[in-house]
Length: 552
Image (cartoon, rainbow, N blue to C red; front, top):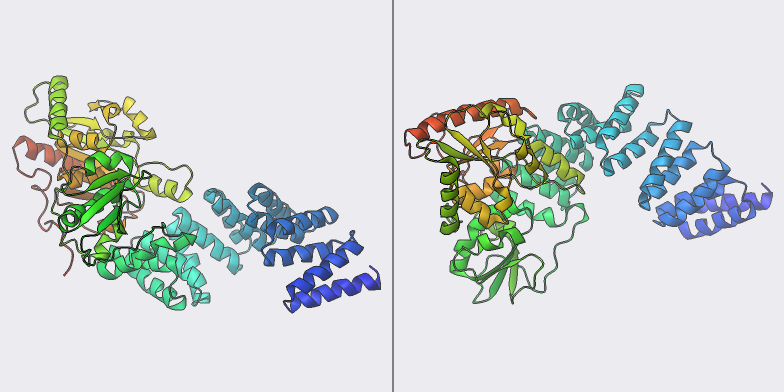
């Protein structure tokens, strides 16, 4: 390199160190133009362009640097980061792997690759990679932190907590680590440990949406509902989300003075069914229109007083204010559902219900003392959402898991399962009397009528659980250990649905114990049902299992 070229390069580095990025970029480009056989100016220019968020240009110049220095792992690693930010995931993975091949003892390269794999939904592969790195470099703090975070994200919670705890002890003012450790504690059924971690993280980073959301979630698990619902409003801004735009103000619980409120579904259909409990009350007090997913339209139209129920995406009638359904307890200052409609607050078509009862009589004949039991064993699947797939796998079961229910006398099972898992109904466990009428169910109105013709519903945590509970039908819900906030941490009853009984996994993934308990409950239910017990699901429960209420 000539003295003139060295001058440009050194000038660029000096400007870069002083954060004079425009001067540095011009000098790097001049040095690169005058000696395109030297990868150093191109590499540093690539780093600068990454800092300036010009990722496409950075990747282009770094590719040239990588060709000049194919054995330089650092250039490959920088190229990987530029490609990652430019959404060139395949090229980023190749560059990360090249960097690791050239410099296998660089844990920071492995951390970058593991982060990419996790973002691509290949989290188990990322965990395996980082386990190897931590085993080879047990004193590398960044690798240990990355492994702890990945283990927490993939459900390896017991493994995650020691790594994350050590990381927090080293960096007690790192809000991201506090958030990760709190999440692992929450998912291990220890929300009381998660709460102070989240409060500290929020004090360090006030107003941070993900921290507020997670603290709100934990507080609701702990039945601190008022503060929990208030913090839960941060759901609109976490992970870079933006609230749905509306041409009018949000309703905040005030007197509407004759104005019309649009109440709109925001999450899954089970959430809509749960918070529909507020619709009858609001319909008596205000002018309301309701927007829900198409499969719920006919069912919600049964609620008296609603001016209009429209499917999501359709043209909306005139409205002056709007409010998402899951914000209603917050804006109505009713965190303990004391002013909501009593159960049942949904109803099915009596004509459809009668048709189903007639159909079952024709198929099964006289069945004095026998019970019709609906089964739903899996939730919905979203292939494009890795987080949802992981959550759905936790809450779902195969139909074969119910094999021990097959031989119970007096039990006739009816599938309520929709979606791809419904195919399992073609091959029920040996000896199980399973009818599958789901091909006749076009929406939740049809499903509600079918449920009303049954004697009991057994389901995992799906919209079917909410529907049966909202109809007041006896429902036995099998709940994963990593429970949702609405079911709280303990207990067999819920204030949301008095007709529901909850059976919980005692430890993460332990469906065997939960199913054994459910089978015992079903056996007692069948006996009580044959004897004409008015409440066969709860009548034989142990003392101390009265319907749950929220604390004052």
